[in-house]
Length: 262
Image (cartoon, rainbow, N blue to C red; front, side, top):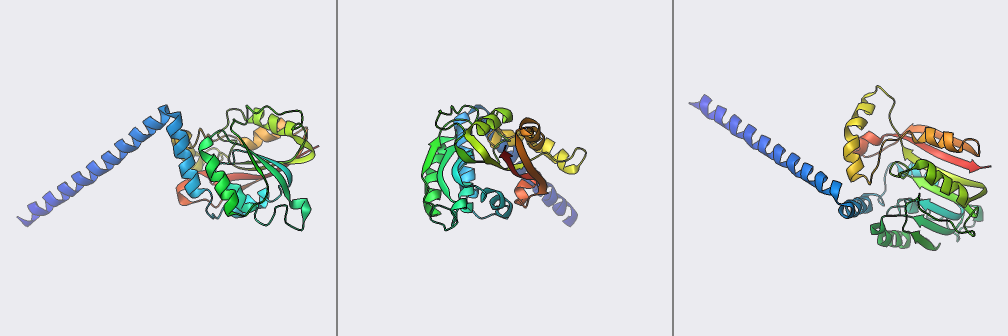
C-alpha cells in the first residue's frame, strides 16, 4: 500500500515537472518567434536589457576601461548602447589636469533610438561635461560631412562589430573620420577555437543570440580588422578570456586593443 502511494507521488511529481518545463519552453519559443518578426519589440527589448545591465559595474570593466580610457579629443563611438563606456570616462573629461586624455566632444552612432534617453541620463549621472551628439543611423549608413572627414582623434568600437551588417564598411567609415595618428579602440567577443567545447556551445547558442542580441553573430573580427586595415594602420590586438557573468559564459573569448592610423 505504501509502495503504491510512493509510486503515485513520484509519477505526479514527474508529470508536474514535465508540464512546467514544457510550458517554459513553449513560452520561450513563442517569445523568440515574436521577436523574430518584430523589429520594434526586438530593438526595445534589447535596449531595456542593456540599460539594466550595461551601466552597472562589471568584472569586465577592468579590460573595458583599459582600452576606452585611451580616448581623447574628438570622439566618435559606434554603437554606444546605454552608455556602457561612460563609466570609464569619469575623471577623464575636459576638467582634468591631463589635457592629453580629455574628451572635447562625443558623437554616438546609434541606430536604436530607445537608447537615447538612457545615454543622456548616464552621462549626467557620471558627471561628464562633454557635449553629446547622437546620430540615429547604422555605422554603415553614416554620411560624413567635409568637416567630419579626417577630423576625429578617437573612434570607439566595443561589442558592436558582432551585430553590424558589414564590418568592412563600418571600418571604412571609421577610417574616413580619423585624422592621421588617430586611433580606433576595440573590445569585441570572438569565436572560440575550432573543436573546443566553447566552439560547440557558441554554435548552439548562435541562432538565439542573433534574435535577442540585436543581430549579433560570432565573427572572426580580429582577422577582418587585420586584413582590412593592416596596410594603413598599426594594429595592436590581444586575445584574452573575459571575466563575464555566468549567463554570458559563451562570449568569454575576447579581443582588445587599438589600431593607429598611419
